Length: 102
Image (cartoon, rainbow, N blue to C red):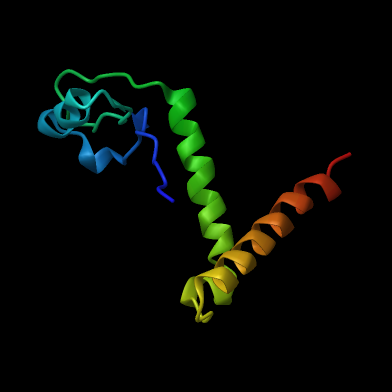
């Protein structure tokens, strides 16, 4: 059974990757680079900040998941048990958003 992985449509790195050569490389492959400009860039390019905001949300989610010691240190020996606990921790975070809403 062969698993096919879809090509990414966008790349969203930090400001530190804001360089002309780094921006050209994904464009050649048909990937949109959404990178906020550095403060010292002479001609700043304005990325799609709505899409970049989603990157921040994903980073915060991973930060919350890593607060679980079992995920951060990966005590589980098998991939199945690690993925199971990861799904359980993600579900706990997801449920908290429903419980605290009015």
